[in-house]
Amino acid sequence: MFSRFPFWLYNTALIAGAPLWLGYYGLRRRQRRLRLRERCTYPLLPHAAPRIWLHSVSVGEVLAGQPLAGALRERFPQSSLVISTTTDTGQARAREQLAWMDAHFYFPLDVPWLTERAVTSLQPALVIILETEIWPNFLRTCARHHVPVVLANGRLSDRSFAHYRWLGRMMGDLLGHFQLCLMQSDADAERIRQLGAPPARVLTTGNLKYAPPDADERARRDRIATALQQQYHLRDGRLCIVAGSTVEGEEPLLVEVFARLRASADLPPCRLLLAPRHPERFAEVARHLERFDWTVARRSQPRPEDVQAEVILLDTVGELAAAYRWADVAFVGGSLVPRGGHNILEPAAEGRPIVTGPHTENFRAILTRFRAADAVWQLSLASPDVLCRELQTAFETLLRNPGQAADLGRRAQATWAAETGAVATTLAALEAYVFPHIPALAPIRGG
View 1 (cartoon, rainbow, N blue to C red):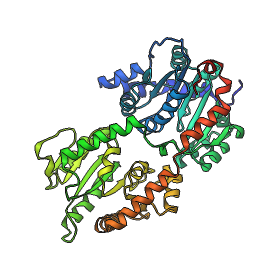
View 2: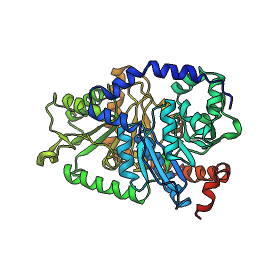
View 3: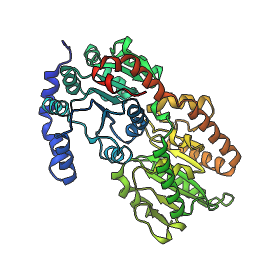
View 4: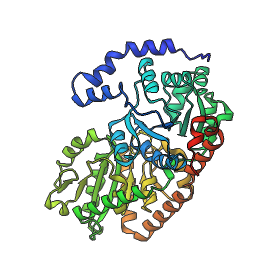
C-alpha cells in the first residue's frame, strides 16, 4: 500500500539514535539489559489456536484492558490470548492480574527487523492496541502480514494531538493501517478524524477504565485492603487522606498542607497515605519524608510500630486501588503540576470524595462528566501559594464535614456507575466490524 509517511527518514532517525536507546537499555543496569533482550525476542507458542494480541503500555492500560481481555476469553474460549507491555510496572501487573493469558512479553522496539520477528513469531490473527500507541514500523509489518490492528479505548491528549497534527497527511496514512479506531469520547473521535483516520472506521465506545473490576480483581483488592487495614489499623478513629499517583513537585505541597492540618487544634487526628506514581521515586520521597518529625511507615518494610504512623508511604505497585477504600478524602495526583492529571475513577468506584488539582488535560472528558455532576472537588489554576491554600481548604472542609464528604463520594460513585458499559460497546463494535473479517476466529467463537 502506498504511503506518504517517510519510513526511510523515520528509520534513519531510529538508527542514528541507536546509541542513545542502546545506552539507556544496555550499558549499566542488568535489569535494563534483560528488558532490551526481551524486547528483541518473543515466546515460541504453538500456532494451533488463533491468537489475539493485546498491547497495554503500562499499568493504567493493563487495568483498562483487563475486562476486555476477560470478555474476549469468553467470546473466543479456544483462542490464544497474549499481552505485551512497554513498561516494567505494566509487565509486572499483567503477569499478576492476567496470569491466565498464554504469554506476557514486552512490545518490540519499533525497528523493522524486530517488528517483523515479533509478528512472524507470534502470528496473531488480531492485534488490539489500547489507548494511543502508533508505531509506524509495527503497523506496516502487520499490514504486510494481513494482520488487522484495532485501536481500542483510544484517546488523544492536547499534547499528542498537537504533535501528531504536525505530520499532516502522513499521519492519515498511518492511521489508515487501523481497521477500527474505538475512541473514549466524541472529542477524541473528532480529533483522530482530523488527523486523517478514515471517518467510517472511527467510533465512540466509551472509556474501558469505567468498567467494574471482575471477580478475581475484586478478591485481590479485598485481600490488599484487609492487609493494609491490619498493618496500619486504618479506620481506628484517625482520619486518612490518600494521595495517589503523585509526581515530582507534588509531595512537598501535600506534605506542607498535611503539616498545617496536623497543627490545627480543632481538626480530628489525621494521617497521610502517600502513593507516588513512579516506583523509581519511592526512595526519593522516603528521604523527603524523613526531614519531618513524623513516624513514617513504608509498605515495603513492615514494622510493629507501623500502627502509630502518621505518614504511610505506599512504595509498592498495584495496591493503590485497594488503598482508596480507606480514604476519608482521596487526592489524585499529576494535577497540581502541569502533568495532565491521573485517573480519578478508582476512588470514584469506591465512593470516596475526590480532590484533584487544576491540571487534568489528559482526562478532560472524565473530569467534564464529574464536574457536571458535582462529583469532584477540582482546584483552580493558581500560583503554588494559592494552590496550597485551596488544597488545605478542600481537605479541611471534607474532613470536618463527613456528611458533605459522603455526599461528594456518593455522587462520584453514581457518575462512575453510569458509564460502565464501555466493554459491551467495544465488543459490539468488534463484533460488527472486525470479527466477521477474520476467518480464523469463526470456528472457535463462543456464545
